[in-house]
Length: 314
Image (cartoon, rainbow, N blue to C red; front, side, top):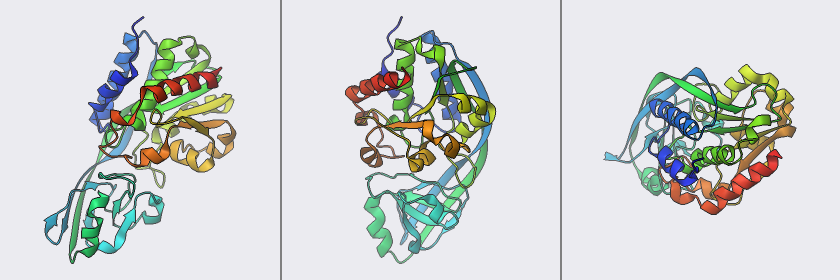
């Protein structure tokens, strides 16, 4: 059997970044190819979803400032009075045009998307924006339909545990979540019997959809609609998201579940939902930005995540 190289796989996924739209579709096909190469059987379940294609510009006193559009609605931003930290819930600015920044990140971090015109900028440019006399941001949005995919590996009739991980991304997405996908594949390749009693779900649409107010997690809700009975009967549900950048931890905190696995029945199933993540503080420094590269990850912590996931499944 060919050895699966997590680091090489993660580098390959970064070639498709940002993994949205056609690039997410290409990522799904590459994932299927990888599973076939390692003789891992799978079932693909397609579904349609609408996502935004966003373009944006920002002028501060006539000078162009680098930015990224991060909204589902196009329009103009003419006031600097709506500067927001993107680490605050997007629901607080849901219908308010804004310029947002991640105070932990040096790059442009599209941490949130909004249902009003919005652009993300680097924290380095906030002072210039605050001091400006004139602000003009322009956001163009095209709603596009894509065919997303959920790749199911293992027991699809009566799984003891269900393990989820998403392969789409905003930004480079090494930590979020090429890391989790690599860990799940490594478990399957090194321990083929794991799939006999467990179900692994590789989801292609976690980051963006037009679902309101919770636009993230759409693919997980599609699985819930199709296979809600499996979720109800499962002993445990694991979500592997953002590992390999530090020591992995497990939590079933309702707030974290809402961020990582916002299915409709989360409240009823919360006692058996476990979110497996790494160093969240470190993640915020690169979150949804081009800084989230392979350099953020270590072999030590990726291997630790594999061991801990296997331990949870025993």
